[in-house]
Structure formats: C-alpha cells, structure tokens
Amino acid sequence: MAEIKIAKVEQRQTKIRNVPVAVTPEGFWCCPSPVAFQKTLKSHNSLTKHKQSSPPQPPKPEKKPSSTTIRSVIASDETQQNLGSSDTVHSIAVPATVQERPQRQKVETLPRKVAIEFGEPGSSDAKVILVGKQGFCVKLSVHKKVLVDHSCFFAKKLAEKDSVFACLEIESCEDAEIYVETIGLMYCKDMKQRLMKQNVSRVLRVLKVAELLGFSLCIQSCLDYLEAVPWVGEEEEEKVISSILRLKTEGVGVTPVLKRVASSAVDPPKETLSRIIELVLRSKEEKSRREMKSIVLKLLREQNGANVADNFNETIYSSCQNCLDSVLSLFREACVGEKPETDTKQIAVEADNLTWLLDVLAERQAAEEFSITWANQKELALLHEKLPLMSRYHISRVTSRLFIGIGRGELLPSKDTRLLLLTTWLQPLFNDYNWLQHGCRSFDGKLVEEGIGRTILTLPLEDQQSILLSWLGSFLNGGDGCPNLQRAFEVWWRRSFIRPYSDRQANGSCQTESTSKE
Image 1 (cartoon, rainbow, N blue to C red):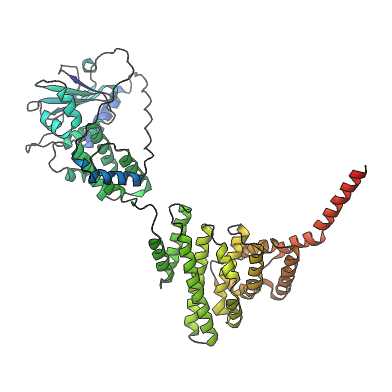
Image 2: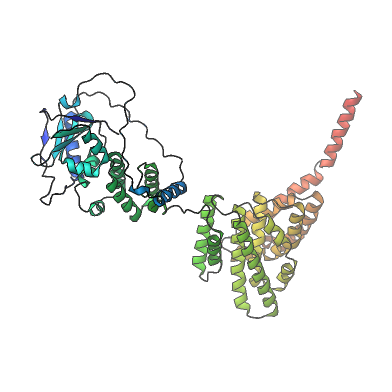
C-alpha cells in the first residue's frame, strides 16, 4: 500500500480547486462525482503538458492471484465461519520499507500544482492528504472518530501520535478518486444504496482500497453487491473471481460470491449429467432438441474430459442401449405393418439420438465399445432389408458416423470388429446411400466415402480385395447412388499388382544373398 505519514498542517503554495461542500446537513459524507476528478485531471494535464518532467517510473507488475482454487477458498471460508472467526477483528499491517532510500525533501514541503479539497475544515479534527503523481493533491477534512470506527488501518496510524489535530498523508496514490470515495463511504448511512449506482469495475476498485484501509464494513458491502449483480461477459467474471481470490482480509464471507461459479462438490454428480442426457434424448420438439444437442456437445468438447465424472461413459452407453432397444422394437413393429408413419418418424429420432451419442463418445475417445455393439446387430441388419427405404435409411447414418470416426482415428476397434462392421453394415449403407444424399441435410458424402475407404484399407489385403470387388459390382450398377471408393480401389490395386510387397521382400532377400557372396 502507499506510504502514509502523520504530519503537521503547514501552509503550502497550492492551487486550490473550489468544490461544493462534501458533507451534507444530515452529517454523512457526500462522495464526489467522478466527473470532478476527470475535469481536474484534464486541466492539470494541460498545465503540465509544456513543462519538462522526469519520465514516470514503470508500474510494478501486479502479483498474480494465488494458486488457491475456488473450492478450497469456499471450504476454508465455511470452516472459519463455523469456528466463529468472523468475530475477530483483523488489522492490515503497513508494509515496511526494507532498503534505505536516499534522503529527499519532505512531501509536505513540496509545492502542489493542483489540489482539490473536500469537507468542512471548520468542523473536522483530522485531515487526509492524497498525493498523486506530479504533485496532484486531494485534501479531505475528516473526523478522527469516523476513521477509527471504520478503518483499522487509520485507527492504528492515529494511535501512534496523540494530537488534537492530525494530518495523514498518503504518498504515490495511484487511485485517489477511489480513495476519496472509499473514505466518503465511511460517512454513508446506506452503503448498499450508494454502491448500487456504480458498475462492477468501479466496485472492484473500491473493494481493493477498502481492503488496504481495513474497512471491513465496506468490504462486506462490496461482496454483497458482487454476489447480487449480474456479471456481463467472461472477462468481467474473471476480474471478479481473481479479485475475490486475492482478498486476504479475514472475517469476511467470500463463499456466496464464489458459489456462483463453483460447487463444493469435487465433480459434477453423475445423476445431473444423466438427467441432462435423458431430457435431450426424450424431447418432443425437433428444433429445441437439435439446438441442445449442439450446445451440450460443444460444452463437452470445450471441457475435453475435465471435471466430468469418470462413470459418465457408463451413462452414455446406457442411453445407447436404450436407443438400440427402441430401434429394434420399432423395426419389428414396422415389419408387421403397425403404425408405419409413426414408426418412421420415431426411427428417425432414435437414429439421430444414436448418432449424437456416438459423437459424444468419439469426443471422449470412448467409442470402441459402441462399434463392437453396432457390428453385432445381426437381427437389426436383417430387418433392415425388409423395411421400405423411407423408413430405414436414417439408421445408415450411424454406420456412416462409425466409418468417419475410424477414418479419422477417433476410435480404433480391432481388426475383427472392423471386418465384422463392414460385413454386416456396408451393403445396407450402399442400398440407402442415394436416400442419405438427398434426405439428410447434414450428410457429407465425401467425408463418408473417405471414411469407408480408409476403414477398408486397414484390413488384410485379401479382405480388401473381397470388399472392394463387391463394391465394384454395386458401383457399376448404381452409379451415383453408391459411394465412390475409387481412391481406396487405386490404393488396393497398387498394393496388389504394381510391385507387390511379396516381390519387394523377395528382391530384398536376393540383394542380401548377393551381398553375402561378395
């Protein structure tokens, strides 16, 4: 904190700016308007613009907030409240100067360039002088009893010297305006009403000065204000939280403010996440369901697994199984011919739910188990052939998403699982491909074709040949209605016919033998 000196009142050459009386007839302090400071500073800067002045010292770097987490602060605060620590009065010590500085002229004897006075000197018994940079000065006519009652810092300083009239001088005051306002709040009967007229940024400045002065009532009022007022934007939220975490004054409750952004629980409960997933999946309104799926997926992607319960994957897989059971039941009913229109709409909803759940699992790198489950849906694949295209094609979106994930490396199922997946679901995907291209707005054919091709090329060469020859027949008959796997076909061709690996291996062994003979 800035250095404070107790000095005698002396006459100095100052330029006094006349300011209206700062103490109202009711007896409480009337905080000055920020405009008064701005006008004075502006005129002061214009006076000193053409004068030479030593370059200002670079500001000291602000200390970063401690590494104490919000939860630990909440826990510590609640513990102190339980122990009754709020009844203890804590004073703020003035940091002592470690190194001796060269002797200089006393501040009280230096001429002031600009000064502002507040208060009534005739009725006061103390004076606080705030000295800013380049001689800017603010004088406050105050009362010792008010200072002692509200500020343990001023109480300590005034106790050091027993005099009828005291003068406290604060040097190098960087935020004189807020010092004046904070001292003025000691005279306010309704501090909350006064703070309501300020914005969050200004209240944070008041909070900082109030802590330096040991003004506990003001600190608590600022915290009450910050707890109730909305924070606009992430930047303002970060400023509030960092300011709260830097508070070192004991006996004030920061927990209500911090509880807005953090819970005392270590991890979000599994039940809450399960409830969110269930509400999204069972929504009857298509637009709202689609928007919330996008939001939840974005938030999970931003978290990247942090602070998410470890058993969250179990919740997703449980929801996947429920959707699969529902799809299988709907396929069975559709084959019988009961409520075809209703079944088609519900199949589309369940297929979209499965695709979204697969997106969530892929983001969490936990989709391998789902690929195994989907590859083993033999009954569903058989029923798929019996349903009309319009009713069944949405299910192939799930297969497409799995191939995209494998092609991107988002999931790494075993060779047997990849082969079973292609054997079970590739032909149904071929059959539905034309409908997927024209019936699904979010369907990306190029991405799906690339994923299918890459998945095929991860298999042994014999399996690649079998699958690609099967594709070739479908492609030659279906044209654009079948996925275009020409790139995968070219890679397989080069591997098989243009200097196969077996020939290269044989050539390598021959070269080794000739080298040994030489």
